[in-house]
Length: 209
Ligand SMILES: N[C@@H](CCC(=O)N[C@@H](CS)C(=O)NCC(=O)O)C(=O)O
Image (cartoon, helix red, strand yellow):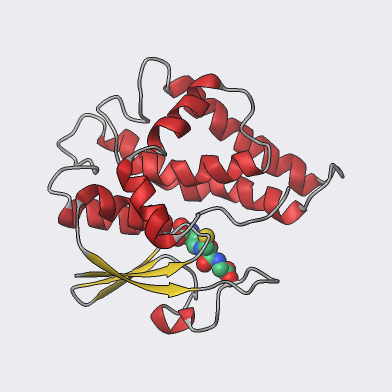
């Protein structure tokens, strides 16, 4: 059985969401953030030396990085559902979304987070906004005529970007973008998302921008 090292208010909800979509049983070890610093507790380093969440254990493998975990679980347990393979026409597009979520978009979101609240201009905030705005604009354009990031249907890429867009929205970086907002509403009413939130708690940190 898959064991998920889950940190509250975090990306590891992505993994719970995917497992709920797949109907796979899993066990959770839940870690709580420090109420002041919001950092993960040191015990998480016993699961993986980076001390970040998510981490999973499955068949003796210990895997960190949410994109890698989504890809692994979709391939290993999904039986073709939620992932894409080299035989699929949109495999390259799938991989791009999966990696862009953390590799580019989330980097910009973290810059906004680190720049802190208020409207004080800073190079970090400006660059973060540029990155996030570029990502949001790309999704808005892609969603023209399709309900999910891939034309072939809902996939782990939607799960990966669901978290990015939700956090970006917390920092006021989503904009009006009607297709993007409709997509976020569409994916976050899925029963599997709701079950993940029920079991793991809210995925957004209770912070004001
Ligand atoms: N790129 C990694 C990021 C992992 C990460 O930074 N996780 C956050 C939770 S959302 C964390 O563990 N933060 C706690 C800390 O840094 O103290 C992934 O996608 O899994």
